Amino acid sequence: MFVDRAEIIVRAGGGGDGAVSFYRAKYITNGGPDGGDGGNGGSVAAIADSSLATLMDFRYKTVFAAARGQNGGARDRSGKSGDDLTVKVPVGTVIRETITGKVMADMREHGRTVVLAKGGRGGRGNAKFATPTRQAPRYAEHGRTGREYSVSLELKLIADAGLIGLPNAGKSSILAMATNAKPAIANYHFTTLTPNLGVVRARDGGDFVLADIPGLVEGASEGVGLGHAFLRHAERTRVLIHVVDASGLEGVDPVDAMETVDRELAAYNPDLLRRPTVIAANKTDLAESRGNLPRIAEAAARAGREVFPVSAAANDGIDALIRRAGAILADNPRVVTFEEDYDEFEHAPDPGDPLEILKREDGFFTADGGPIERMLGYTAMNTEKGQAFFQRYMRERGIIDELKRLGIKEGDTVSVGGLEFEYYE
Image 1 (cartoon, rainbow, N blue to C red):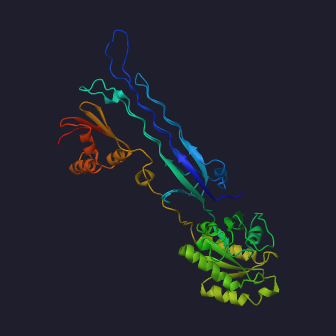
Image 2 (image 1 turned 30 degrees about the vertical axis):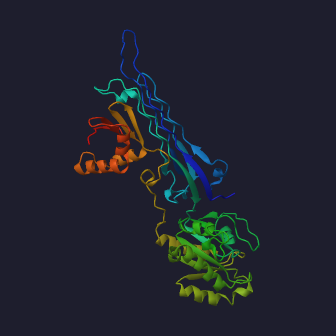
Image 3 (image 1 turned 120 degrees about the horizontal axis):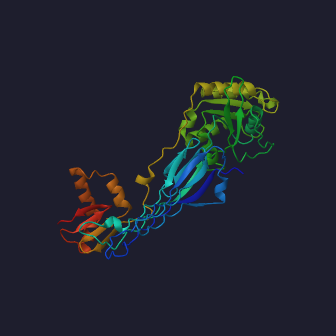
């Protein structure tokens, strides 16, 4: 079964907690703090694998979770980081965050690897909080929460040329004649439900991938019939071969059929109408086609397209059609439109790693959490402008107000994201 859409959950591992521990040994009564850090949580990444052809595996497994980091231990022992998890997807899969619809990754080539959910940072042990004036800290950090997302997977075939047209126009028959593919072919009034791929072996060595894309019906751009299941796969072809039933025996005038397909392409993505397109006037072995060929040629000429009379049933005209498609491909280098990735760590919503503002002991406070870590990541603290931004951020996010509520006084120390500052009014 060909499956080209799926929804999964990716869950990164949380960081391990830091340890609170003090050195103990014979004849040593006041050993210093030696609590180790927690390990980082594992991340979840996706990798494009050309050996996969569908998203079928994701119908049976929908949750992908990386391991949590281990807690820190005594004697400055750090916890083991959680193992990362890699999820294999077919080449051509677009990965979106379900809530926002933003593209996390477009897996356009074999081996491409993208981190989808980053593991949480391990908490610092109490050894990291020791200073000459704070020699016995009795606290440590909890590990940070790993990121979690609901993710939509959408497979878009990457083929050189695509056979498009209304149902029962003969696309599958042309694919079978032009390649070694063996699609299901029958004389019925329904459409192929899944795309089929075949490789055209050209005599000049210019082999290319030909796709029989599921037929569409009027209103497909609005989701009628197979809707976007057809149009999605047409987006990444360099040449379109528009197959028309020249006989009109299915009750659809061939010129009307051409116009219907063009309207749906334009409504879905106007760029598809600008793709090099040739018309394959199929079923010319039938007498009814002879009167329609001049009208098809006239309509094609208005759109600046060539017409190739073919008969898939008699294997007539297929070679000329395929040679022309190969020539167009040779003149049009591979320029496939891919989705633009976005920076998951900068733009994605915070999954539940809030600000944590605590009074650790008299005269010492901490302010940590994902928002602060991101703020410090893009703030130049060694510049006057960066310091001003930092002060404004602390006030606007209510951090200063919360520190006052906890009883901070002038001269107390505040650790913000691991950096220590002296508080003053």
